[in-house]
Length: 174
Image (tube, rainbow, N blue to C red; front, side, top):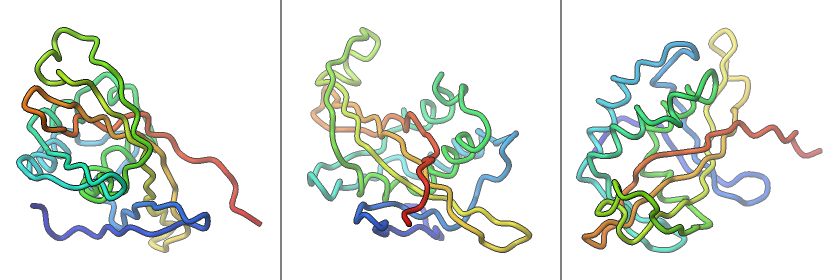
C-alpha cells in the first residue's frame, strides 16, 4: 500500500462525491514520465478496494500498470488531460471508493477471453487537481472519467484502466 498521499474525498456544491488530489506528483503538461507513473502504479498491485455505492471489491492486478501507461487511449491524451490521468494514479483507492453508475458490457475481443470472461464494467468518477499561480493555489480543475474494470474468469473484478478523462467546463453556480 502506498503511503504519503495527500488525497481526500469531498462533496461538491451539488452533493456529488469528488476526489481532491492535493499534491501534483507528475508535473508538466508536455512531458509526463510514464515510466515513473508505471513504477508508482506497481506499488498498488495485489491491493483491493471497495466501491462504497455497491460494496463491490475491485482488485489491482499487474495489467493495470501496462494498460494505464501504454494504452491507445493514454497515448492520445495531451496537455491537461494527460497530466490529470498521470496524477489520478495517486488516488486509485479513493477513485474506486467513489465510483458510481456502473455500466456492463459483454467482452467482444478474443484476446480478453480469460481477463474479461464475464464482461467489462465502466464506473463514473470525478476528481480535481490544484492549479497554482506563482506557488499560490488559485483553483482546482475538475475532471471526469471512467474506471474500466474487467470481470475475470476467476470471478474477481480488476481495475484495468481509467478512460475518457475530460476537464469539466461548466461554470460555477451563481
